[in-house]
Length: 271
Image 1 (cartoon, rainbow, N blue to C red):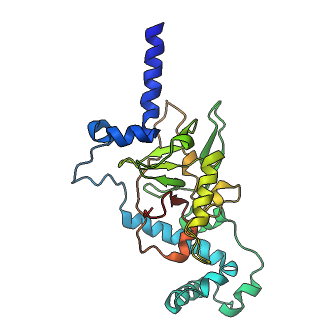
Image 2 (cartoon, one colour; image 1 turned 90 degrees about the horizontal axis):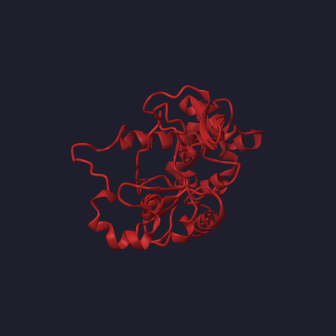
Image 3 (cartoon, rainbow, N blue to C red; image 1 turned 135 degrees about the vertical axis):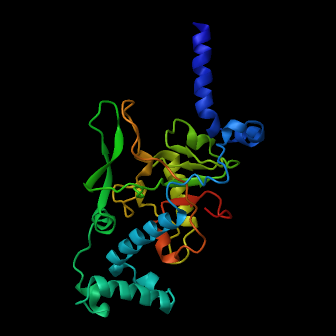
C-alpha cells in the first residue's frame, strides 16, 4: 500500500515539476528529458512559418476590415502607405461603397466566427463535449478544415522558464510547456486572468493594443484564440490536430497586434 502511494506521488510530481520554476532553473541543464531533441534537418514543422504567418495576417486583416468603423483612432496614427493598403482591401470587398462614407453606411458587422468562415472556409468554437466527463472542447461548427490548416492559437501569458509562475500553476490544467521550456498560461480564470489583463494594459501604446484580452470573455474578437480547450478525450481514436510553435516576428503589423492572444510576462522580453 505504501509503495503504491509513493509511486502515485512520484507520478504526480513528474507531471507537475515542470511548472515549479525554481526546480526548472536549477536542474534544467542536468535533465536531458526536459527538452525534446529535434534534429537540425527536421524543423519539427508540419507547415512552414511563412504559411502560418500568412494565415494569421489573412484572418487578422479580415477582422480589422470588418471592424473598420471602430478603428478610426488607429488609422489616424498609421502611415499613409498602410492606410492606403486597407482602403484598397476595403474597395475590393465593397466596391460600391465610397471609402469616406463606409463608417457611416455600415450598419452591422459580421461576427468573428463568420469572418473566419469567409476567410478560411471553416469556423471553430469551444463548447461542452457530448462525451461523459469530457468537459469543454473545440469543435468545427461550419465548413470543412483542410489538412495542414491552422485551426486555433493557444492564448495566455508567456513566461520564461526562470520567471515566477508557481502560484498561477497551482491547480491549473492550462499550463502549456514549449520545447525550449517557455511556459504559456492559458487559464482564463483566477490569478492567471488578473496577470494577463495587467500585462495587457501595461503594454498598450496609445491607441494600439499589443495583445487581445477578449479571449478571457465570452465575446472573443479573435475566433482562433480557443487553443487551450483543444483536447483528445478518447483513447480509442487518434488526435486529428497537433500543436506547432510559432514565433511572432518583430515586423508584425502594429495595427493587427490587437488580435494576438499572447503577451509576455516581462515587458523587456519579446513574446
